[in-house]
Image (tube, rainbow, N blue to C red; front, side):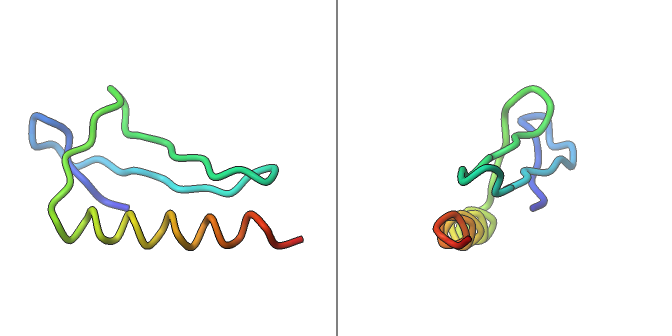
Length: 56
């Protein structure tokens, strides 16, 4: 998912499901600046990932 760092550079936050866990991989420097729409998109991705955790 696209985002920006505190300096306005394009970065990405990645959401993975691995070994029954939701893994959130932040951009280098561990900071992400999200717009309201981007934060809603992240919430939807996290919800989708959480639903996949319980599936075989």
